[in-house]
Length: 159
Image (cartoon, rainbow, N blue to C red):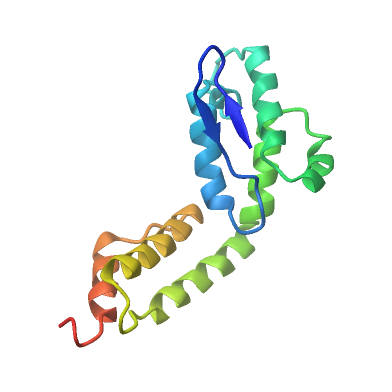
């Protein structure tokens, strides 16, 4: 799916939300909405008057970016912020679920080892992916820890 910028030929591609792509979906949707100056209707600054046209565009955009079966679940929300927060709660979960997901990610990080024949770039992409998932859950992995994990996980042939 895409959103065409008014008065121009620029088209933005976006993902439709699914059970596994929320962190990436979140980043892409925020950046596209920001490019169209409609993100501020979802997360308004204090004492900011909202443009009703932009508010309606933001709500329509959010409904375009979610699966058909979820549209009816979110249809009762008429405010963009409630739709956004509802999606976030559903896909990131409440604190207990977030903590459990974070624990799983940490275990995955600890058990991650570079395989013989695997390139350093591929392994670094795996590490970066885990770090991004942890960041989306509110946990920041220090760069020193990631470098240590990289060096500890390399096969002896690299050393």
